[in-house]
Length: 159
Image (cartoon, rainbow, N blue to C red; front, side):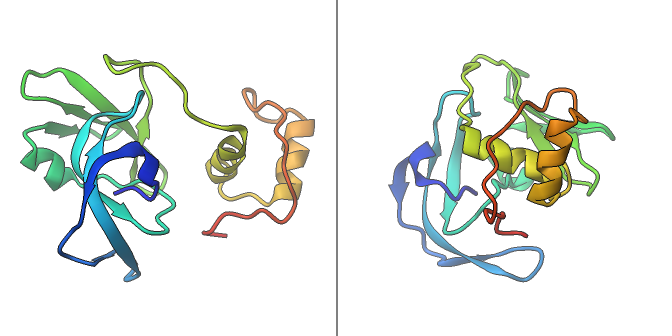
């Protein structure tokens, strides 16, 4: 499932109008299409869900498409029917697997903008408030965290 239309091709209408998440909330389904974007795995039957802020992958749907999914404690690997590596996820603190970009046959193009990078780091540091994010940047408390432009009052939807 994705919340951003521009990464989907051949979007068609979908019979079911809502999807229910684990917390009981509903998301409106605006269509179904193919994920075809440089740097991302090629996936079919991807739901376009209004207001979805995180991308979600259904393991059963990956298997329905003939892909193999192998879980271990530290990671999850997805391969095709010829055992060609497609994507990898690493286990997070909340027992979810977060997709990790690795150079594959698709591309190594980075599609992240600076605004998205602020949001990404905000999530990586446990939804830390923006004032403290500025502090850890100024004190260089995190090695690879470069100075980002943080605008006050721009909290994520979860916060």
